Length: 342
Image (tube, rainbow, N blue to C red; front, side, top):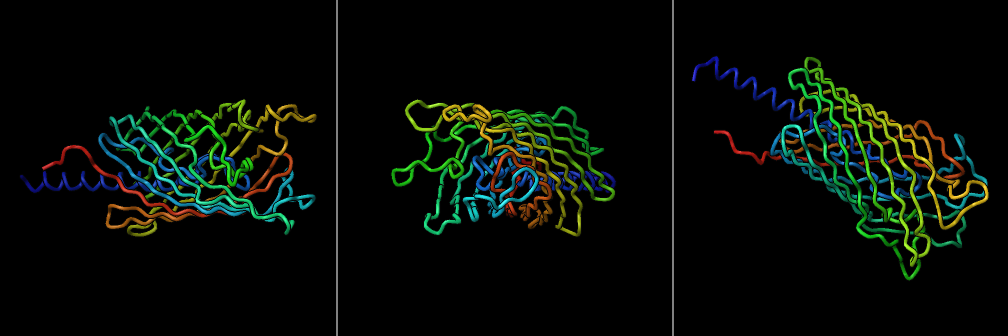
């Protein structure tokens, strides 16, 4: 092999490595992006995995695990804080999840994820009311993504995807013989569908990447005539995020995410109200969040990321407990399951 040929192969290998690492960084930066019920205690998975990032290479597998803690202590009515006739002093949850993605072809990727709430906790203003808790498996999901336009040389990608979410049980949770309140249920107990669009542009000369995630989640109505309060439909969610990823130094990437979540009102068909019919007045919101993130590559194989979500704009229908902050940590690794090159 000539020296020139060897240099060309080494250069190509370096570019592929940088591109793969950049994709992993992008995957991490969306851990705070999965749309969810963003009030005091989320129902459904509050943290995404690689469900928003672009397609993987053929026969590549990506494994991700993550943990998130969220805390809330402020009620909002519209765009302003309120303390009138509020029930809760604060609420929080601790959640962990795992996700796996696999590149079927160079343009088609399949992903699945699931998670578990260690606890969903509410503390009341009335000291005579005991602390309320829920826990258990959240919803799972399966997503197919197709790379409609991919130009590795210029680091441009447009990927579209669709998928569905499923509950591990259709029945609400009971603890000590009592049905847990809806805010503390770990799952929606309902199926859902989603569509997404991922746009990406990289600038390798300045180690900068800009990408956008756009996703719409539709929740189906769940009805069970034999169980109390199960004729219900959670609101639909539209999520739009913009990310900027920049290499800070060797092995370190800094990321800034600006995310907007818009959720429609829930519908309670078992308990109508005079003001809005089936519409649940105290549900639905418009939330803007800024999420600074830091990612570190461990020996070129593992990536560790930490992030913090900071709400900067809130508008909530009716009166609702709203998120104050949350933080998450994630770990990911890519595996090449294809044939090894000599």
